[in-house]
Image (cartoon, rainbow, N blue to C red; front, side):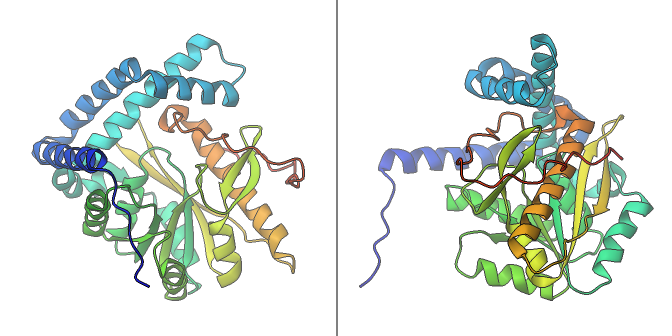
Length: 322
C-alpha cells in the first residue's frame, strides 16, 4: 500500500511559509553589510532578545544556575545577557556570506599546531570524527576547515520546513561542507562512506536531542549525550578530534583542536561510555574558557537517567583549558 503523508494544518503551513520568506528577505538585506556592522547589529538584536524573550531568558538562567551555582544572580544575569549578544552577533556574521567568505582566513585564525593535529589524524587514512559543540561559532569552524581543502561532511538535523533545510544545506555546501541529514534513509551508510573515504565527519554532541544517548557528566550533572561520535569511531577505527572556534579580542575567531584517544578493548559499550564522557569533558572545558559563547537557553539536563542507569566514571573531569 502507498504510504500516506499527513500534511500539516493550513495555519502551520502558512506560518512556515511566512517564516521562510522573512528569513530569505533578511538574508538578502544583510548580504551587503560589512562584517563589523553585522556583528554590532546582531549584538544589539541579541540584547533585545534577552529583554523580550522571557521564556528563553529563564531557560538560560536556569542552566547557568546548574553550571555555576557559586555565582551570584547578578553574575549569571550578566553572563546570560552576554550569551544572547554573542549568539546574535555570530548569527549575523554568518548571514553575511559573501563578505565573510572573502575575509574568512583573516577572520578565523588557525594556528599551525592546531592544523597539524587534524592533518596527523587524517594521515592515518581512516577518516576523522570531528566533535564540537555549540560554542563560539560552529558554522565558521566547519567552513574554515572545508574551505582550506579538507573534505568535510557534517551530521545535521533537518528543520521542520524542507525549504529551510534546503537553504541551510546550500549555505553549508557553498562553504565546502556537505550535510548528512540524520534520520533520512541512507544516512548511516553515508556516515560510514565518509569515514572509509578518509574524510572529516563533523558532529555536535552538546545537546539533549531525540537520538541514542549516554548519560555522562556535564558541569557536575549527568546529561544525556549523543553517542554516535563514539560508536562511529569505535566501529571504523577513525581518529577522533575535538575542535572549537572561539571568539577572541578584536572580533575575530581562533580554532583550537585536540585529538582524543579512542579506548581499546573488547567491551564496546564501556568504550563508548568512556569516549563520550571524555568528549563531553572537552566541550565543558571549552565552554568554561568562554562561558558567554555557549547556548545556555538550551535545556541541557531535561532528560534524567533512570535509577538503573549505570553511572559513568567519576573521574571524567573537564580537560585543562588550552
